[in-house]
Length: 377
Image (cartoon, rainbow, N blue to C red; front, top):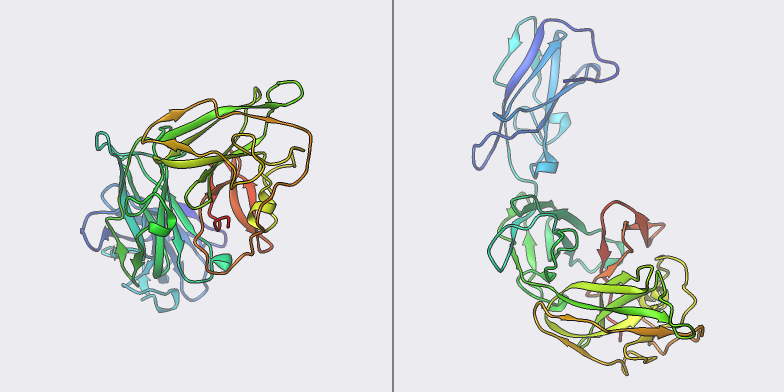
């Protein structure tokens, strides 16, 4: 139990009750319950429900209290006693010298989506898959996406505003080389099914079965010496659409690997100029000083060689030798549009996308993250 600053002096009163799921009637463990004096807005005391969904707020001074039940991080909508949705409408709980019992709450779902991610090979759940919902409201440049991670049993839930979304499953943090996909079992953004979130409802069954991921690997070295080059960005490109997909940076010896690819046809770009590619300032590290190059030793996307991959296949030897020229490649400039169909672009390992002063930046974080972008034309 926590006593907040400004709390009233303790007396003999208490508030207790049980918090349950409004749909299943099962107890909710870990829901936060807080009470405060309505007259002074002071005397805050908070606690959490136990495995049986029970709580008790003890040593309360006499008076009328508001009580809040909060479990949004568990996927439940916030509620105030008794079954109210706003703080100002909370029914008062009168506390005297005796315990007040039966101050219960049945919490309904936060609008959003929920589902389970499993491995297609054996049906086992996959933990730490990042699930992102991308709003389709015509304001992509001004709208934040929402993401969550699967638990040990493969389940996830994401709180969302009502609207239409496309959902992506990215297994980069799972420790397994599984292929990313979009709902429902689609490999491209444009083909993804639209998920509708209605007010007051949690849309369940937004599941995914992830198959084996294909891999492209190789080495980037200096053309003059053959020595491996570190911290060179390497990205896969969907050959049919020209959309940028996964990215990684070369290791100290110049080696790299691009995992989590569905079976398809790809091109590879080395030492990519992200800001020119996306048509907007994007910070992903300092310029490495080399001109953008496409495999195999090509200077344009159109001329780049195609790499066909089957499900779970690994193709090695996709190498590059970079010179010191900084002559820009021939890339058609992109004009940002408000209603585009984005695709993934990764921040480097340890960074996450954030909007800073209206622009997307990569900010250091413990978890790997990525963002979408319009296709290259």
